Image 1 (cartoon, rainbow, N blue to C red):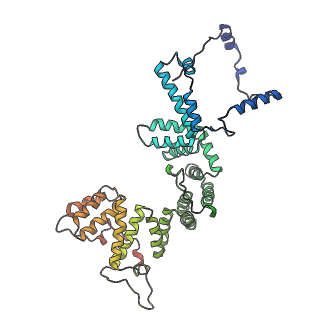
Image 2: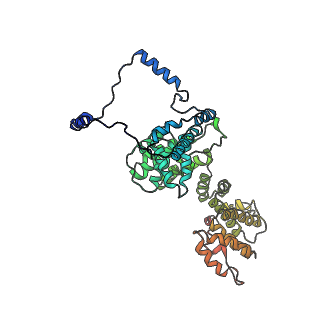
Length: 427
């Protein structure tokens, strides 16, 4: 935008002289550092002390009052002398105004904040191009959020990840134990270079670092990088060890995520592990913790679990009580706490929450249950939700043709496309 003017052209003899000099004379070399005289050091120290807004770490220390004073005294002639030949008066005014804005930004904006603002802008298609340009520039300046964003975007889109300065920064951040950098760097090692054991070691270390110390227990500070969508270390460790058939490693990683990090998704995974082992009391406990985080899938699984128990005891008015000496099935251990009517109500409560979160399979079950109860018109609301979710849209459209018909009959328990029992093997 702003051009540079050469006030005095080079002499012809100098131009011709430069053009005839050997090219090797213009190679780059490390500048020599000569010893300075004591008087020079004194002058330099005095000059540094005069820079009142510069901290020892190179960041700006500027109060709002000082910033406004600087803005009020911006020397317009400075811009006029530098830009008068390329800009009109009105544009010079705009340049002065922009300079004032930059000064004000120096008070309340650091590179991390600029990265966050650019990330927010990138979500809108009209601003994505300029936001990405800013994020690239910030990443090149070694701002961690921007580096993670750019490299993660390249990784997710399948872009070849060459050994660039951004990859060097990512590796450095991982070595400095920035958790999200450790996870992302490990993923790149595993998925792009086949260095799985190195990745597992990095994730193992990240899990150890993730565990909060007792002194910090109860802190609820949000992970500043969570918006980037990078998985947690325990998730990656569990996923990769699961593929390798290391069930113990998978379980240990999930247990770390659940019990040490209190992560709701970890409780959801752990619930499925213990459920398949027949520990349905633990399944109920862990899946409830996951569902209480408004995880629609966990709400659906928990609601389906109670509905399965309801159908297994259909027609039963009271909770089951096993005979003496008779082995109690895992399902009966849970069902003993509730009547069959309570199981149905608990099921519908969780399925309703999942439906509110847009989970189509839950809405499809709700529509059918309400139709069974004679509340077809109320059920239409849930049928609409089911049609808007690709997981249930096809079956929902099939049911709509007959939903309000008087001859409508549907055995939900036997409709596998609507309801699937999770623990049929435990009778």
